[in-house]
Length: 259
Image (cartoon, rainbow, N blue to C red; front, side, top):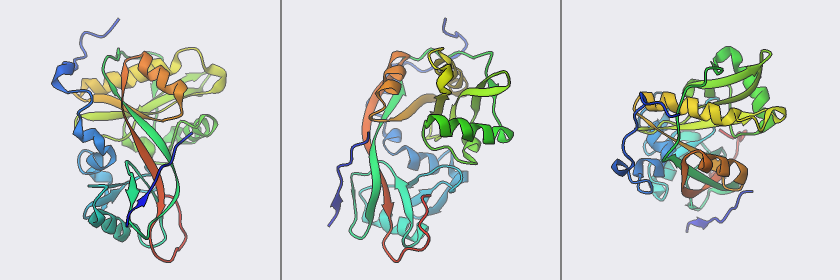
């Protein structure tokens, strides 16, 4: 019998072309319904650690696994084979889990899609690279925008704004389903908030995404109303809410680490 869950968590650039909104119904975008899977099964296949109907990013890249069909017991069996017994993994979207799996954490997230964002370069932004990761991790630790690991920067382009050489704001690209790229790690040092840095970086990241023919989208914790209001105010539309779970696989635990 499946275990039920109900966990609640806390001027435009003419050269940049985006398809007419009528071409992609905003609320009917199947590729985004299971975005981690469609990314690992598509443009991010080079990252995928995969067995059958289950896949995950490397543990130091992104903290999620995915199932081809979250309601398919065979996909859960494949995930068990992939991660082994007693392992803790994060999965989304998931509404229920098979018997034997244990929920050890979770919450609610929201997905927003670009329906009217003004995308434009930010001349003051600089591209961040591997040498910047220690400073990025420090900024992420102070601002808590969501998971960012040692190799997350390999998932796409990350831009930052510096003041006196110090990184004070950043945003970049994370999961990449076909035709779409997620904007992520949007954060600003507390003492620099209220200056529009996050908005400028979002628009700059979006400009790069659109230039290669993709459309931006993003995720946020459902209770992060401040961020959601910002995203909606600059041209994103709330598309869906989903459950995010941290689950432990059946079997005798080894050293269970969140992947």
